[in-house]
Length: 500
Image (cartoon, rainbow, N blue to C red; front, side, top):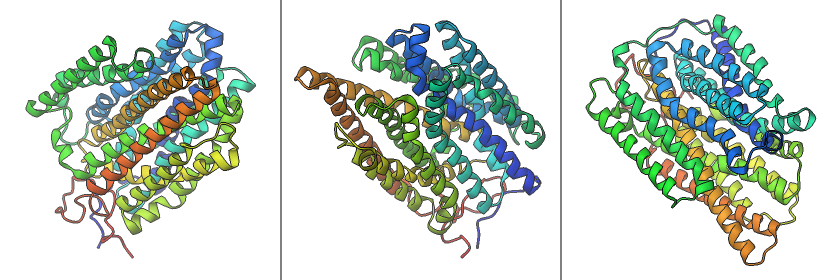
């Protein structure tokens, strides 16, 4: 017996899959931009004369607006229509990319990056909710999640390749110009393929908790601002402690508001679902580990092994290919047979093995023995993120799937900012101690990377522990036990219910 399907959206099958391609194209543009800039930062610094502290704001401005607006953007999708918000985000991101590419001074580039982040938040926050609405059959939805997860995870690795090639072959301006054809290629068919919609059933403009929206947006932006500033100011500085305390106060005020508001922006009942709360916690820990791994491995290749920008990107390419094989070729079938929890744990253990291997990278390492095995074990991310996406969206209803999608993406961004902040600052501190003790500059850097990779391995072990304890059972929480309810999204079957 299979889990009851949600009511059909009556969208023809071919149009549904074409619409998924459009949604994935929008995601690809956002994900590529998140990593393509990393490789080009030295060129941007030389061209525009950024100081080291100022250069960080090329990334920070984007992260602050993106991470801070995701939750609000998801709720706006429920209120105004997800198609409308998606198209607005595409237009805003594409226009901001043009301004970034044309930027010839620091202020314009940082301002345009902030606007880019806002457009990215609008696109990302509603995409998963639209997928849940388009695909009503569990088997189809599993495949859709696998494709979406592949684009998100492999796109990050491809961004490193593209960033290196464009920066070295042309110049850094083209890492932003490349978004223009992608944005147009996604927006034009989106007008035809994405089904028109309005406010979600049971949602009205009075459902927008303006006070809650202000508190959570300010709180999240200030949280990301605090985290990204620790590299420059340290964890115990007055700035970090002051802004950190204020961000916690704003978020505590938001939680209190949600507990008492008649129409809360983020109903706290969502967190009673073990699948939703557990999946978001696992994702925050996993992304914290893997985003820092991606940044620090690129630095190891360039600063220790002496790779150039293009070579660094190409060295990361096997991780994208291995993720593609698992997410597109195996993830959906493994979940149908074994359940999300087992697939998630298996993927996490593969990632633990990969990052643990990096804790012993030698000073004069060789790519085939010291780096390639790790990029192949990155295949575990293709399994883990597909299972997490299904779990994170498992209890979304038509009235709040945009909000749940925004929450899922928010934990991703907070996890990424936290992971880079913690590992980078601790790695830098260890590098400084080793340098003071007489180690060479390269040896000291390598020692700092070892510590960072060990911390990332610990984060993945913590994620595995949460998956084993909080995410009990093999399938989506509640799929077997809850009574059928036509308004509840049940995207994944539990193993006992899956067809043999």
